[in-house]
Length: 544
Image 1 (cartoon, rainbow, N blue to C red):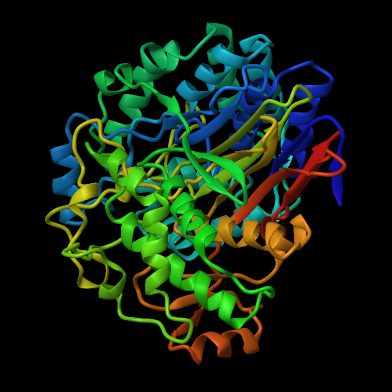
Image 2 (image 1 turned 180 degrees about the horizontal axis):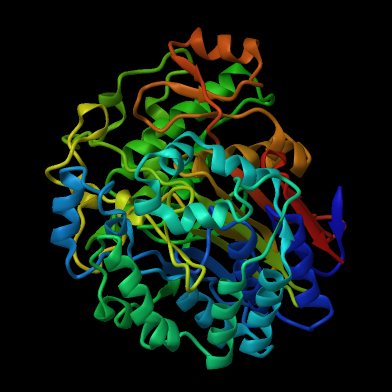
């Protein structure tokens, strides 16, 4: 068990967890300072999932104020020329114009905001931590090696037109004439230079309003994109109080839509009203699966739209949970229409992937839960030779009115693209507080649609069924996102568990897709910080 008395950092990369603790312990930084260094370093070593070219969302808790945790939405924004993006995506022209996939990246702006409000160390010092890592190099992980071999990535890199369409990325992934392998040492001097330029500038203006903005606009336009200098200069982080709900007697705080925490908090709301059995058995797994179906039926409405806050508020009412509870049959599951309210339509789901999550609690009790992404693995596959940045593919997360929908369903009007709009997401960073205003849980995950269900199962196992935190995360999982109408399980899911679902009418399919959790909990008795990183990505927490 990874138990710590003072502070802890949990990331999906052991080296970066250690760096985060160095910022806290040796440099005297806060959780916010560590978050800046950790996010930048993850963008150095696991650049297939995150980096300065992407965005995400986070929750920050300032223990001294004992106020409401703050939510920050730094998702990528659509360009002013969103109509061109829609026309290109509708005719599936993104292969010829990969730059069209890129939205305005928000990660750096959010890191600056965290640092300005809650940081203690010098901006330049934090950037130098990541610049040194990029300069000196690091050992390629098995995760990074496997990401290059993912079907759609390999097909793109091996295509006849690869040199013209994604040549810079291909060269970055094969610096010695072959693709990266586990144990190779990789140095990223262009990114190191970019990090030092940003650090020396003292903030994010050089990136959004200065010389780097002009370089990025030129990079993206050369790849067929339409982002403009005005798009970069007008970008802002959206900041608000975290969305509050309750689970297991504790206050839960998440990010509002278009982030994904509302789906997770709705799941918590329903589960709080359900009389789950005393064992994590077939009936319990069936009940939870039914809750997932109800939750994802509502996800269709949770885009970046006016009025969405009212939708979220309605989902978190006890009366809404009771209504759902009354519809769950302990012995049967139903067609999709059963899970929709009234005349709600059924729309194609948007998905997301290529993500990383980390959690930090410092010695003062401050905490951050942050999820960041560049979209698909290696984002848009548009890589800047001069800056060492990969641009995101988040415009693919929008729905398009004239485009093909998943399973032949119409695209969701709640997620249609518009200038400066942000696409729907499953990113679900949360923090939970106990009755004294201390951190009880800091948790989040990477893995697209699987994020909310994976976190829910882990916390139900931990609190209700008294699993250890590591087992609650690592044990076999199940998932349902409403459509297609089947339960997804991993290959290690026991046959008897599968049969228990099938007896109740569920169709079960095996898939390697899942989410990867990082979590920190405060033990109620010892008050120690217990941390766990998902075995599926070989992460490791560090603390003291």
